[in-house]
Amino acid sequence: MAETIRQLLLKNIGDALAEISEIKTVQIQKFSPLELDTLPLPAAFVYAATEVRKDETSATEIWDFEVAVEVWAKENELEELLGLVHKKLYEDRRRGGMALKTERLDSSVFVIDPERSLGGILMTFLITYYNKLGNPYQQ
Image (tube, rainbow, N blue to C red; front, side, top):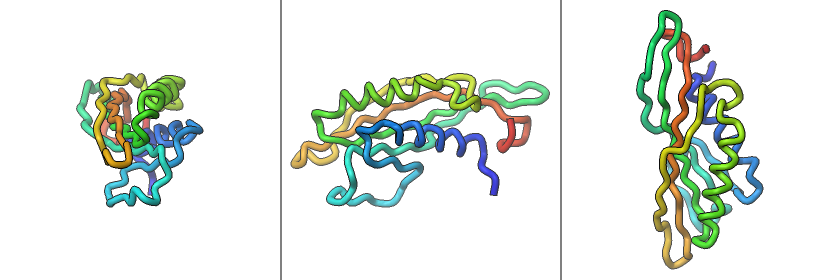
């Protein structure tokens, strides 16, 4: 089955994160429970968030697609990982030609397990992309 432009964008983000040597695990759209005792950390998770139609022409639909990137790590690694993820995703802001732009909207820190000093950072990236009118599989 063919993949939508959205799916290809999520995969592109996951592939980029996998190139960061400090990140040991990358998962896309993982919704099942995770076992912290066996999960290699730092870990990154990529999720589709909000998507809003930005514009339409006679041939294309233009979308603002928010992608959530969640990184779990020891608390003393979080700021460095935020910087590494930001830098990596800005290396190709057009996502291999599939996007018009990529920009980081925000980030927030949260606690996963205080006894293990594990925390997370949730970053939201806005990817503006287009597809053929009525066809989310083609540009």
